[in-house]
Structure formats: structure tokens, C-alpha cells
Amino acid sequence: MLALKSGLDRRKGERLLMATLELTVNGKVHRVESDPNRPLLDVLREDLHLTGTKFGCGEGQCRACTVLLDGTPSLSCLTTAERAQGKQIQTIESLAKDDKLHPVQQAFLEENAMQCGYCIPGMIMQTVALLERNPSPSEEQIVNGQTETSAAVAVIPGYCRL
Image (tube, rainbow, N blue to C red; front, side, top):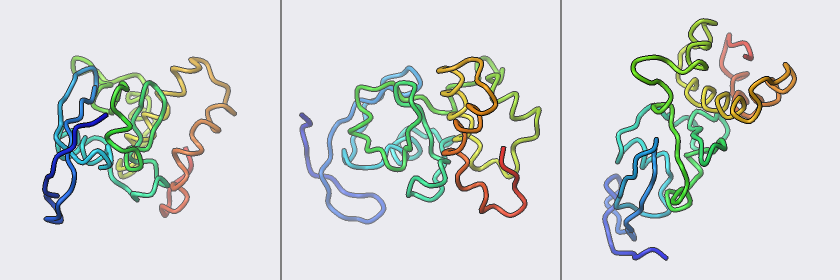
């Protein structure tokens, strides 16, 4: 159970309940004072300064905010910070090691799959999760694995589905 105390919303100036949350992000434990119902996306970007995860629609449709929770793709705009406690949170920042891109990042780069690049971190995280579950997926499994991630791609003019 969380110990709650009163705090102030920095954006709206409203009073809210605050708690000390312990989040494990990219292998490092962080203690954050926050409203436990605040979206994980906001905590990652505003408190931990991990800005690779993007805010797109705020409704879970575009998938730009995808992170991995215990290896499973999760929409950080819809996941509360409290719900993420006790889980391993992995963001796009965790993938590159020693200035070397993760193989999925490298593949996206080599295939010129970036377009504007805004939703790419979410697509990459979804792809990483798929390949961790199945290192040799069929073309059908790849297409099915990306369907949710690229759901909003069709609304971007001139963009082909990956």
C-alpha cells in the first residue's frame, strides 16, 4: 500500500495526492514523488528525462508511447506509474550499448524505415518484444506482431505500412 501525501500538479496548479514510487527503468531503480495515477509516460519524460518514448495521441491508438513492462509491450500513456511498480520497465534508451545500435534499431536505419521518426521508438520496442518471444518469426507473425503498433500509420499521408 502506498503512503500518500498532498502535492501540487506542476502543470495545472491543482492539489493532488502524491506517493513515493519505486520504478525500475532500464535496469536502474528510481524513487519518484508523483501522483500514483499519473501516466508512466509523463514520469519517464518529465521526471526521469527519458524522452525517447513519445506522446502521440494519449489514447493508446498510435503506439508511439510503447515501452516494455517485464518484456511485454505496454502503452505508457495509459499505464499508471503505480501499475508499473515492481516491473522491469524498458525504454528505447536501453537498447543501444556502447554507442552501438540494437540490431532492430540498425535494421530500421538500414531499411530507411524512419519517415519522420516520431512513432519509430514504439515500433522498435514492439519489434524487440516480438523477436524476444520468437527469434525467427514468419512473415505473417511479423505482420500480425506489428499490426497494433502501426495501427495509426495509415493516417499519415504517403506512409506505407512496414
